[in-house]
Amino acid sequence: MKKSNRFLAYILSLSMLLPIATVPAHAANIPVTTDEAVYVNMDYYGAITGTSVVKGCSLNGNREFTDYGSYTKVTNMSGYDQPELTDDGVVWKLSPDTKEHFFYECTPKQNSIVLPWTFKVSYKLNGVPTEAPKLAGASGLVEISIECIPNGSAEAYYQNNMLLQAATMVNVEDVLSIEAPGSQTQSIGTYKAILFAALPGEHTTFTIRIGTDCFETPGIVMLMIPGTLEQMKEIKTLKEAKDTIGDSADSIYTSLDRILEVLDDMSGSLKMTQEGLQSLQQARASIQSAKGDLYEEADASLNNLDALSQKS
Image (cartoon, rainbow, N blue to C red; front, side):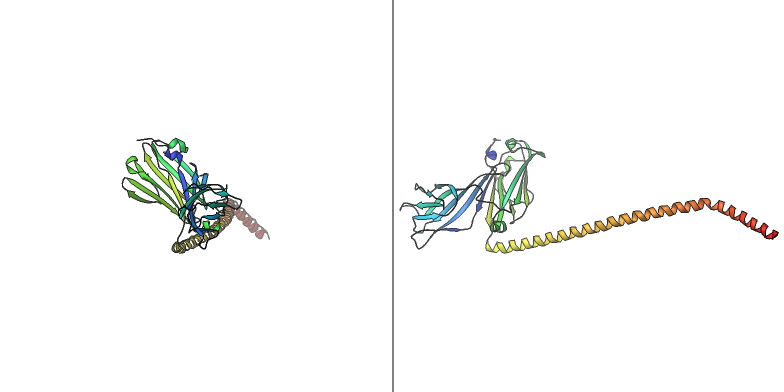
């Protein structure tokens, strides 16, 4: 089997689809409209290494407009017109022959985009924690675990509305076994597609186990997408049910703590009772052992009283 290092190049790439936005335009009745996608590259362990935003614009007859954003670099993907970067954003002055659908890529300023999840990725080979670079071409059972942690620093909209998906493809002819607990799997020819999903604000872990003689993978693609209006109703219901279950579990734990405290107090009382019974048992044993002497002394006293009575 051919050894591939693509696994090392992009184990994780992530794109977050944002809602449709409007870019203000000048000197036109119909403004420029745009949709944008954020692409985030990560290293083997889930740390962000690069972020870019690709924007697709419907010019609606405009050839000059301003995108108000914080960017360090902007690249024209549809032609050769160069943008003008300002403190307020980027100004486009396009040539008259520019097509109505215009695309450009932006590099946002550092930390200007906060994702609703952070990720911790770990690896094992035959059950032993292993560094990612050592897995290329490895033989055995490879386990990839992606812990998805809700990020409270993200905007409320993204925390409450973004759905998380993670997907990869595995060629079943090149592996010995595939396990992906909690995933949706679908056969596509000789490939098997593996898809995980998480609700907004859910803390979960995606795990994939692949048995192989020579490990390679095309990587894992993660998507953060907004739910539809109909899905939002279901998400709200699921979140409310989850919160209710969480509150009920907390109440159960509190009650169990109280029961354990009562049992602990009862244990102390029972111990004291046991010690008291042991003292009584010891007193009984003492009385039992002295009973013979008491009877003898009582007989002697009776004899003395009888003699005294006769003398009297």
